[in-house]
Length: 392
Image (tube, rainbow, N blue to C red):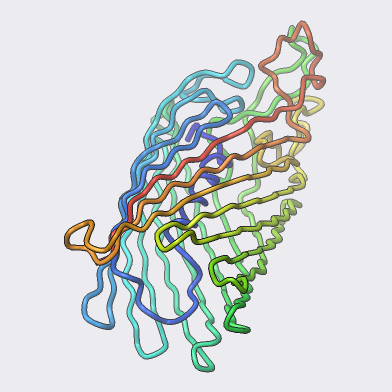
């Protein structure tokens, strides 16, 4: 698990946006096939690979789905020890692959949609299995939709350099989503999610650094130590407004996150979509994310074993990110792909800038900078998603 959590989360979150949207009414998903290539490049790490999603209805009440997803990770992360090699002071190359399989079943009964899901992912030092359940109900002539969902995850963490290393993590999630059609041109929604994680929560390789006057560079390293539990809550408000020209729409979202590690985060996102003629759809997006620090995070601790819990994962410290994105969808003429009612070609690009307020770039020469005075770390990342969609 050498790649940083934030980089994987960015890529995975974008895929979630692609392959799932909030339920606005209790109906079966459309029958379709999505074939995707995704790429993330930033911070010395490259993540890419294919994904295939298939949804098929069995009669009028049942829909099944399956997804195959691959992450091929390579690069030289600045803050992770990969395969037992210390890369905190000199980024070292590594490569690994994560393969994920998903299966889902949805059952529709009148205005109620029940969903069951299973996901399993494997990589050379991390295995994860997730089970999910959800129920969606519409009210008041389908103007109001309420969705409840929960999931349970069971992870096994290892280390490439230590065959005897084995740790466990349990993940529980509970959520509610409410969508309301306020007018023919305005939809609003609210969501809440509670997360309870228990077990081994830190990276198996990452270390923290502490001041060490006996070291030539002024600091040394020791393993991170995290609490065994983490509870978090997230609240989100969103709205979609169709402009009077009926060819454009604006979507806005605000999300607030907090956990028992003292991290608080705010996310603001705006999207604009516009249809050109009958075949083209263009999307522009701006997103801003701000986060505070965990109470046991430090870029440089004063001495070894300075406190009970210690973290130097830069995603545990204060930072902000800004995303600018653009995308285009082209709908092929009917009948262009034999056997399918509708087909689209889609290309999306996201440019993300990360700035860390208390994480320093220790790859610089120790002769030029004293410990704790190195430049603050920042980097840019690019995410590309190219996919084809086919409706039965």
